[in-house]
Length: 427
Ligand SMILES: Cc1cc2nc3c(=O)[nH]c(=O)nc-3n(C[C@H](O)[C@H](O)[C@H](O)COP(=O)(O)O)c2cc1C
Image (cartoon, rainbow, N blue to C red; front, side, top):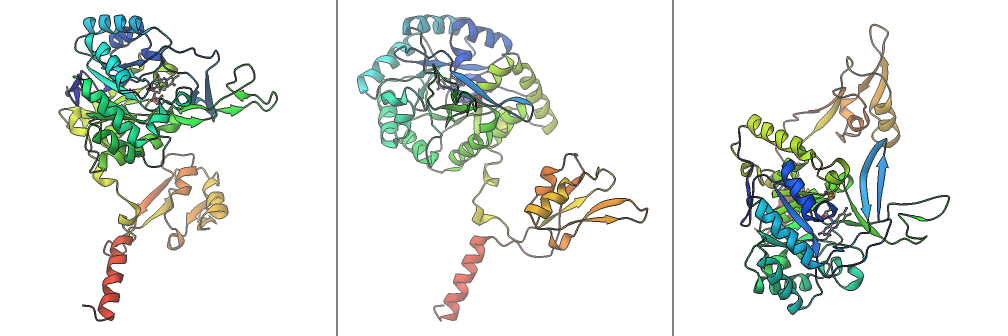
């Protein structure tokens, strides 16, 4: 069996699956049950001055018959007194000394406020701190959460204040509601962050009831923007994790969050540079026991891949993720339809005819059967037909070797510039 243990900037846990700071980590009862179920760590529901929550606060986007493709909430940080949370964190850590218990913190951007909460939380023996500069609603209107996280200087300064007082590793949790996540990540690192975690939720409105005209959710007929998470946000989160992982000035461990629902999702985040992952919506949708399948799946996968530890996965795809200018413009794939498997539903033909490059033809074969055939010389390899095809294996995208040397846009520009210079007699 492979070693599933992780060490995120000094915070160790028996496996890479942590519960993210959210309703599943609200109390000691919940976190202890989660650890019993197999979760390797938990980031406690964000601590700070207790707030009052609204009644009616979650909504979901169901898509194509699947429940909870996306999840939306207008919940704030903990509504429980700090002393109660601290007592339960202490008890949890005592019962589960080898599991990671991280305290998520959010206070006003004042040095003494950060020092005070850091000292109180570390006194009861947490393994690390996560600074919540990410929640996009409610707390942001009070100058905290995403309102802090959208100002790189404030992130840097508050991280610095925390580091002045902290003795345990400090993770800075980033908001995705920003143009370039690496700017804030770099400022967090400048402030002394030992690690970063991302993403928190994305500004969103789950929907509008077209008969009552109320927002979804609404509170007595009024709505406010919420935070979006769940499977729908995974591609956004994965890109942001990869952008941070490959940025030379970030260079600290990453805890990947956003839409992770399976061991395969977790592996993707780790391949893109995350040391471990945090999960919220999937646990809220399916309960704590989903972690059993995640652990089994990851174990089997590592064995299948011949890897001795989960750490061997971290970052293995990062160098494959570059910029568009580095992509080989001479690489060519074309669609090939497998007539045996194809059910002749015509979806590929319509997609190609109406919205792509008009290169899938209907023909009658020698046995008089109608078949779909790709005119390969006109196919640009966009993948659309294979995406809309409802049958696995009916359309393959096949590489065509045209005997050309690799040539990216960047290489092409360089070659052209050199040619120009030569023509002008510079060289
Ligand atoms: C209802 C709800 C409450 C949340 N509360 C917090 C919070 O208190 N602190 C925090 O840092 N993130 C909070 N989050 C964000 C999650 O920790 C996580 O970043 C986000 O949900 C993305 O992960 P997911 O797609 O697995 O849900 C909350 C999310 C939800 C759905």
